[in-house]
Every structure is written in C-alpha cells, then in structure tokens.
Length: 131
Image 1 (spheres, rainbow, N blue to C red):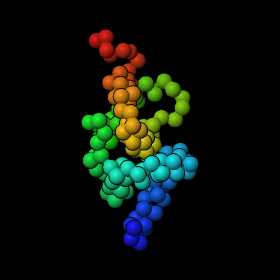
Image 2 (cartoon, one colour):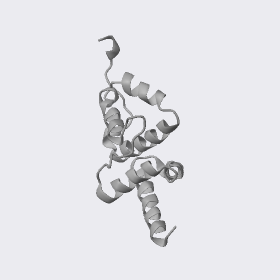
Image 3 (cartoon, rainbow, N blue to C red):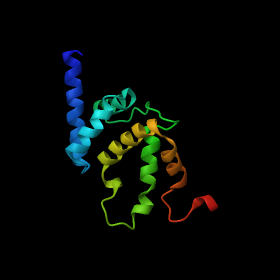
C-alpha cells in the first residue's frame, strides 16, 4: 500500500468517525463499521465517493438494492416515527447514511430479512398487504 493510499484511508476513517459522532453512534460504532468497510470494496467506494463529492455514488449493489433504495426505505418510516418520542433518523442525515451502508454490508451475508422488511414495512400504521 502506498503512502498516498494510507493517507486516503486515514482521511476516510476520520470522516467515518466524525459522521458516527454526529449521528450519535460514537467511536466504537465507527470502529466496528470501519473494520467491515475496509474489507468491502463496494461499500468503501460508496463512502469515499460521498466523502469526495457529498453525493451518493449508488454503484454498490446488493441483491438488486443500492444505497438510495435503503435511504428511501428508512425515510419512509417517517410516518411511523411521528408518534415516537425518540430522536428520529430524518434529523440525522449522517445516521441515515451510515445505517444504509451498514445494512447493505449486512445484506451481503443474508439479504432476505432486509428484503422482507423493505417489502412489508411501509411506514404506515396499517398492513398494506391487505389492500
């Protein structure tokens, strides 16, 4: 690994740690996520692109899903969170991004539970499957 690559990875780690702290997740979460991220080329590219541009690359795909698919699914839960007192993801852009990356990496091992949740959980208070 070149010195330039080491510096780039170090910058990404600091960026991820900063995002994690802003998201209220802390340094331990960032460290655990980083340890998986550096072993996953697609996820690492997604984070690097976001770091460089502030936009989503959306080239990392797992079981037909991309980062924006996961983000939309999370944001769709806004309706369900409205009645809850806890901090909502919609106010934590950093949390939405980190959790989306985390979910995509977890989906590589076992996508079905997440696919089922995305199909079944619409963010509404009623079961849309009966419609």
